Length: 167
Image (tube, rainbow, N blue to C red; front, side, top):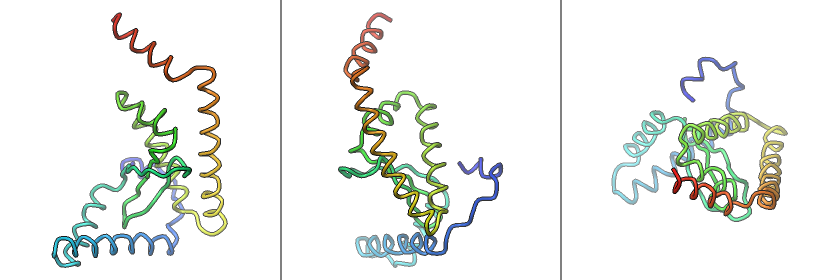
């Protein structure tokens, strides 16, 4: 993602409100860690910001029933994409790609592309993306259910296992 930035058209800047939220998240995490470790908050905050700067794009996981399949988030300078492990996107698409690293990385790039647009959105555009993300997630859920009717996941796995035994 970082390497591709030099080829990108100039994107809209982050809205000030989102920059402030990202800053507050770092501050809150630093306060919590400082309490737990008895280290000075400023030292912890500096470390968190350095880590976020070093790794600008990360995939994280959360388990939220009924929530969208992903959500973008900012943590200081870091873009985070949270993948919902309770959504079929995770169980039937993303997790199934763990043995296909290039395809999995391609899916992650798609998620970061969507996240970048959503995170720069403000006002009505921000509301639009939040609503659309929910609708995309619901539609994907339905489509994966329909795919099950045509090609059940269990049958696919059985076929893969059979090929491995033969090969």
